[in-house]
Image (cartoon, rainbow over all chains, first blue to last red; front, side):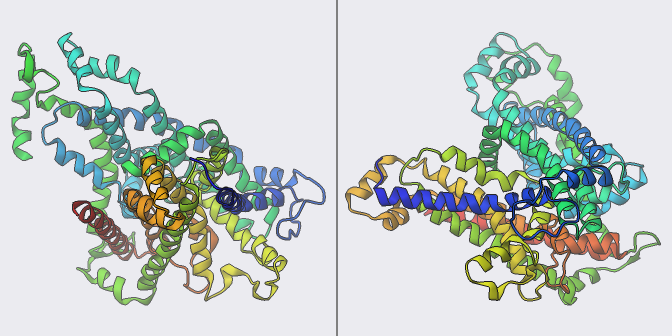
Length: 274
Length: 315
């Protein structure tokens, strides 16, 4: 379809304007982070001398090295665990005939709307009772559990798009339900699985409230959790605060650029399906 | 369901019976062994989501400081949610945030879509990557970034001065009357891209000849949007409304790092008070009642949105 010239120009003006507004806050912290520690920064201004001081100070005082590793440890366990469990359950709901399947599935669906606030209080007291606070496992299990409703919904929807004939043909060849999943359906599920994995990674990396409550030990905190505490200590040292923020942003930012199609496709479809 | 559980063992053993052909094939047969696929997810979800959720409801019926013995409170904690000025205030603030987290982004998203959906334009994928940026970064980082943007020396005031509005500059997050709106606009910034992209991708599914027809009829951009695009986007709007409204009601991260409820109590939200009451004020029962109220509020809103969409579908 051809657009008129004015339409085309108006469209680009809007797009560029919105892109600038979106990027402005990022530009603002990037420029501030390169100022020397403690410098009085004024708005968006080019640093007088580019300095990595603020990054160095943020890195050592807040111990971002440890924080990033903690976040990574948690995400590296949460992602495969949630992917495997969602796939198994999604397969059962989507392909097999599950007794009381609809009831159990709606029970999972309910979880899509429950806020974290509803579960954190007893989670803290109960997990403390069994020694799972201040532990990676407490966070890992809680996060994976929170991802189940979306994961199961996502995989069920995926498996339903597989042609029924494919499954029936495999059955005629004598394949068991397990074999159908492993040898027939999983090889076709790559894109859905990887999109889900990328979303789980992002949600795990960004999770804040849960970590804030379940992990009090500074040595075990995740990057966003540590950043939350860091604000309190460095509230007036803008360059160091901005540098710390960038350190926490950088990994997820890189993952986003690498897998942008998966992220965007996942968030659009994920929202529509959920 | 209890009847199903009782018969389960018998059904499981019947799997050993030689496979029958045709309709009652193994995949197509209702079998209790399929529960094995669901069990791990169910166990995890039950232990770490459902049981804690029910436990919150239980705790909400007690006065408990988290340490000493709890005493029965009945619905007293729920009464306080509506009578205590601090708690009711937090809920009211969350409702105001809906305007900024849901209302503005959807409105802006529709305006942008109206302009963008009439034709495909090159370079869109780059813009898409930019518009999704606020969605992928941790909200804590968003909160800190905007804290700096709204600072007395921050970029917002700098821009206002540059366009001749130096008179209205201030420390935005410290202003009793405007802090809540300032926080709300952070949500607008974060969610407008998502809404726009949802709508644009929805509009792309519209049959191109519908546009052709509208244009042949001499429809301008506005009429074309109202007659063709908007009706096609009903599903997307409902989704955007659901997602953004939940984000507003259950907000915590951004507020925790940007204002922490200040100045005064003008920017408190339920999530913030749940955290504060339970973990610093020793009012665990009260915090639980607030968390349950928040959840019920979210469920009601989601239900209403779904109802509206379904009702329209039947027309």
